[in-house]
Length: 245
Ligand SMILES: Nc1ncnc2c1ncn2[C@@H]1O[C@H](COP(=O)(O)OP(=O)(O)OP(=O)(O)O)[C@@H](O)[C@H]1O
Ligand SMILES: [Mg+2]
Image (cartoon, rainbow, N blue to C red; front, top):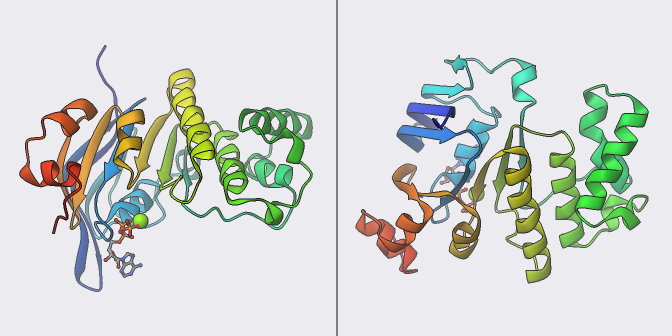
């Protein structure tokens, strides 16, 4: 089977006030893969995810998503809606858990019965059926992150971007979320780009892993190669847990 490319980046850069924070010569992301991005704080990981979610325009370069080549424009709404992000700290509406999960379907104007069914299934999947009517503001950190995941999955995204989704969570919730993410990828072929500080999480989940340093992609390889036989000495140092600059 030929791997299909879903994102193609060429000479892509993002600068803020003349400071270049992301500069990627070339990156292809394949349909249906789980790609982990690791790297120290400030490396540009979140900025790259914002570009992949079309929340910002790159300063320069090519970002191609599916068939559309984006040069100085955002893709049409229909395509933008195929991509969603789960952030490190979920931002939930001050409404019930169920209303939060339903939100993305409502803006897509699905009918009420279909929405109710999809919401119930999504809450079941993250183990929160019992909390459907609770106010989202009263949830624990782990519950809130599971609601954020349910809200992302309910729209059946083509691409799921995750920015440190388990950074503040206890082992129980980390495991639960990792299992759901892996299952989503297996069952629906959802493309997943996961930013994580946790190298063990990258090892557990990702098909490929990439290292960003100072906005540049130092190395990207199949996960076993990345961890066991990296080409770049900076990757080896990062994997060993040594400080890298
Ligand atoms: N809107 C902005 N304006 C100016 N500078 C920004 C903006 N967004 C990000 N930066 C800078 O870009 C650099 C990369 O930030 P980014 O948030 O992408 O890093 P990161 O790899 O996600 O770090 P962390 O692991 O701490 O989340 C940082 O130096 C940050 O200060
Ligand atoms: Mg970040």
